[in-house]
Length: 313
Picture 1 (cartoon, one colour):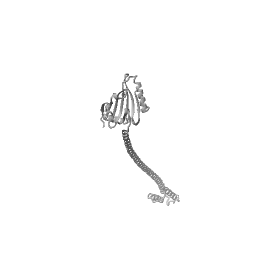
Picture 2: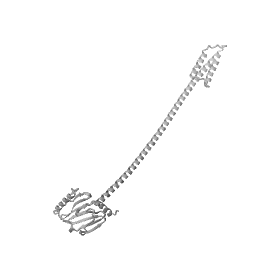
Picture 3: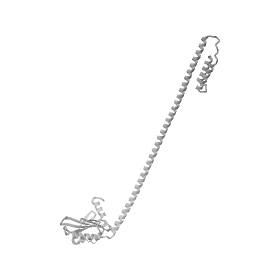
Picture 4: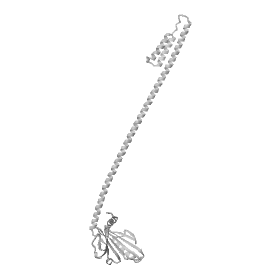
C-alpha cells in the first residue's frame, strides 16, 4: 500500500512540475494502468492475523483512489478551462486583428477618397482656368476683330464721303448735291441754325404752283436737302397736280419704296439720295403738297445737327 501511494504522489509531482512531455490524458491513463497493475498483484497475507490492520489498509487504499479520481477530474477541468481560455484569447486576437485591418482599410479608403477629391478639384480648377483663359482670349480676338472691322468701316465711310463730295450728283432745280454756289440774287432770306444754312428762293423765280422753295446747306458738306412746297389747294384741285408729281418722281427714281398715298410716298434714289412726296391737309380748303429731296450725306448732316442741338460735341 505504501508503494502505491508513493507512486501516485510521484506521478502527480512530475506532472505539476511539467516534467512529463506527453499529454495529460495519456499520463492519467498510464497512471491508471499502473495503479491497476499494482492492484492486480497478489496480495500478501499479513504475517500476523490482526484484522484491524487489514481493515485500516483497505480504507487507506480507497481514500487514495478517491483522491486520485478527484485530482484527475480537477486536472481535466483545468485543462479544459485552459484550452477554452486559449481559444477565447485566440478568437479575441483574431477579432482584434480583423478590427485593426478593418480600421486600416477604412483609413486607407478615406485617404484614397480624399486624394481622389483633391485630384478632381484640381482638375476642375484647371479646366475652369483653361476655360477662363479661352474666354479672355476669345474676347481679345473679338475686340481686335471688332476694332479692325470698325476701322475698316470708318475707312470705307470716309472714302465714300470723299467720293460723294468729289462726285457731281445732280440735284433738283438745276443744282448739284454738295454744291455751295447759288445765285444769291434769286434767293430770299437766309436762316442759319447750328450746322445748317437755309436759303429760300424768291417765289417769283420758282417753278409754277410754288409757294416756296428751300435749299438747306450742311456745314462742310454743301447742299444736302431741298424742300418744295406747293400753293394752297382744296380737296378737288389738288388731285391732278398730286398725280403729276407722283408720275414725275416715279420716272426719275423708279417705283416707290414705301407708298402710303396720298399722305406719304418714299423713293430711294441712287448714291444715297431720296425723295418724299407728302400731303399736308390743314382743312378741305387748305391742302399743300410738299416734295422733300435728300442728298447723299443728309443723314450725317442731320445727326450732326441733332448732336449740336442737344449740346453734344
